[in-house]
Length: 398
Image (cartoon, rainbow, N blue to C red; front, side, top):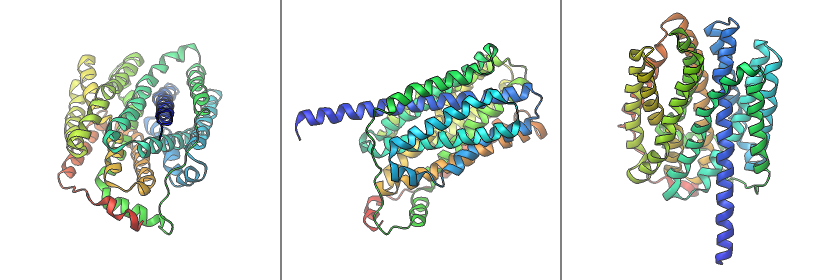
């Protein structure tokens, strides 16, 4: 292969990677904005915390449902077309929020946003993971996580646009989507690698669980944590007399922690292994969540704890995907990504729902105690998990 061909392929790979990362940044901004913004708008309208939490869960119900059919469109039409469809759906649904205050309509719109977000995230993460060389997989998937974390941490700042008009935060978000869509349209479409003919879909999912059950848990925990923090924390913050300004900055601090450690943790996992990094992050994250209620309304301590918690658990989803790619054949990576996304959706549905009921009926701080316990249990499970090092040997039988 000539050097000019190699150079063109390298430029094409870099352009594709940068474009996909920008898509993830904007998608993260959208999710990071919608969750706290809509929660605050409903709270200001007098909606109870449990109903607020149920309505917030609609986005993740959409994400969950999408995972049962998104693999086939990606296999049939390729990554690019699914990403374009996802961007279009999220943009159109977001533009409709300011025109109504109906809980039922907002529930449907959130479902549609979830479907669009899920589609574009599934396609982008699978495209990045499947095309990354093994020795740099942790680094590249960490860049994916950093991109999402950057967008997700910037997103809540859009709350401060609300005084300019109900529609302003939504319009700004949609303008960003329109910009990245222009870049996506310039990319060359590609198709995922297919499993060998005759392999049953059920067998791929069963095999994935058997070989990689532990590495699929981080998706659930990340969804649980993300949705809880962005949907229920604003309600907790208002109850301890934090202003909307401080709530948005604390959510930003959580995202900043993730940005600071995302790449170092990815590189570290390439060198010493994914499992020890995940176990250590789970223990540290657990301690940080347990300590948040003790900080009360002390903003300085809350910022420190949010940065620590966000830093160590903000890379859970991306590290889980990288770990799955390490121990699974490439032909069943799409199945692993589907399962990880389903787990993320289940965690995300449970997060705001349990958070809303917990705040109303148990305690304002129950969310942080619950998150601390779940991350500690995950870390303990890591000590008993033994990955199947012969994953590639079964590829031929797939």
